[in-house]
Image 1 (cartoon, rainbow, N blue to C red):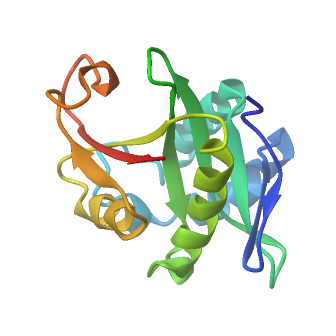
Image 2: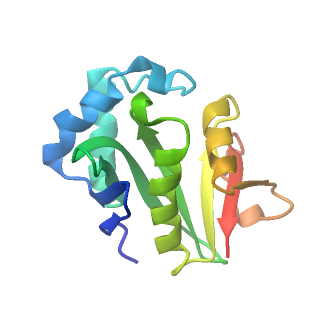
Length: 168
């Protein structure tokens, strides 16, 4: 599976993250309110640079571009998960606050999910229990919370995160 496709709809374009995107993406990520329900202070430049390098190394990171302005407004990642049924994680997602409220999140997640569901059976979202905003956003796009009894192979070993699934 190509983990860095270029995908587009009327609202957004997703393309592979490139090293040259650091400053543009940090302009978005430097807003502390984006990360207020997240345990890591990614709004700090040093912390964000480590996150950015990890994103590049993942070879699954995409930037979200607003088609109206052609500016980077966020990013997300694909990560394959081992074990049957075939699944992929979508995560590490964030958007500039000006694009919160569902329309843009749904637009780029629909692109990612539509692409991935042609190749895998399940899309998984791991969400910190304290991150209510992300839980609600995933529920808006059709994610259902699952348990270890339902899908034991999709749980993280720590069991600390809530697990949401979208599938065919």
